[in-house]
Image (cartoon, rainbow over all chains, first blue to last red; front, side, top):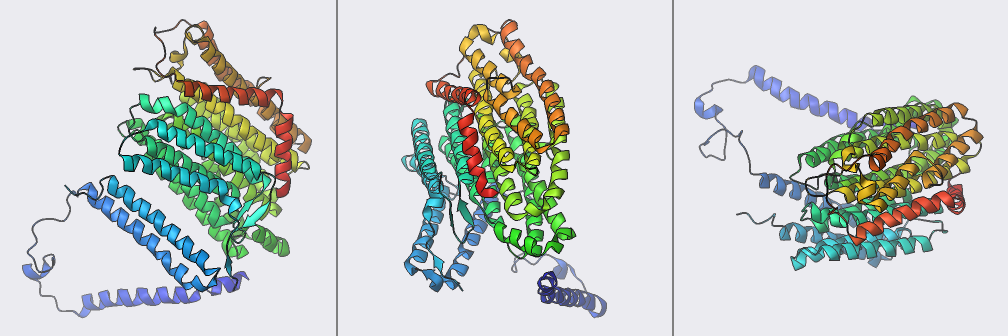
Length: 124
Length: 489
């Protein structure tokens, strides 16, 4: 039982080893055999073709973190839709599964209204 | 593959009522854009009472639903009632306090209190590891925010951050343990884990299972603040708003006990010999450390934090005793103790809130000086709560300690009982010291108490009634507790 369970994870281990080898191999190979001919243009930060203004290590407005956090929150909650969609035909009766998801989305909507009324989204 | 059927919503009826209540409280204020403190209190108390009525009406039923992930049995119902009583007391004692402290987030405060109770209820009804984890997180997340409710207070911020970081750490341990148990038993359902171990006794010697159980218990030990995982308790209890401390020290601990008892009784009953030894050591350490450090405290709030650690030690004696012959007596003693503790401890914190006034926190021992002259009724109430915490008859604390020690004697754990009784004697010193200050010292300052309100008095009266009734007539509740734990055995 236990052995079976652990053996089931073997492909993941193999996958991890291959990924590590490929990733490390590329870096090592290019470091060993690649030609190095640096100039100031080449080693400067790539910023969509723009000229970099200053160092990236500076203070950010706290609202960036708030927005990022909210994005992750809503993102993860929407991922819940996938297993629901896959299992949708197993709901008995089907309308029950539908109502459950509508409720879930309504609760999400409440969360959205909450952050909106609290002024998180106004950027002034 | 099985169909996903409509679950029996009666199992989570009180939870649903509370969730709707919390949403209405939060959105009422948000949409009307006016801070209506009274509305939040009214809605919160009404929702709690309705949930209490529903829980009481379902108390005798045993229903399992959501694929056996949630079960409503008398055990869960008993705990749900403890949580709801604690919530009701907390709402009553925090109304005036929140106004005095100038907090603007009333609706969030009550909403989070209620959502924390929903998490506790899920903990008590969960019969599956992931569901239990979900309840634990809902409870803990709400408490982290509540501990830091006073945004401009450094101590409150410190409490919230410490609680959050250490709490998350403990949660990691718990998840780690769950993953091991799942890996070995092949399921997360408590009953099926129990069956898998029963069918294959070789698993009992499995190092992975022992490691899983141990790390799972580390997580629970943190949540009930048992030594050596108690370090966060004094700082968090002292820094958090007093009403939140009153709430945290009773309900969430009871919820963690509920989940721990269910996990150990339903999933790992065959590992009794392992956790018996573990909890014997932890119980002795918890009692002794809690009481000895409480002796040295000058702040009553901090003293009550250490005393709450000590009380967990007494409760763990009963838990060890449940391994012996009379498991029903031992477990019902735990349930009774937790209910009694909810009344007497919330009551003691209510007096701290009562003492609070302009420029005086009401937390220091000196603030109690001469209370008997300035407010005889307040002093008498505190006297009864302290007697109860010390275990002096005829109070709830005495009946609770007696039932715990009696269960331990029946189980043959004489050494534990002796240590417990010695600890109670030590504890009497620091409880009675407050009484001495209240009755025998001159008041340091003049003036009345700003922090009084009819609701605060109602909360104190309710806590007082519970403390006295459970002390004078413990029989009925003890029997109800005994009947409710039978389903677990």
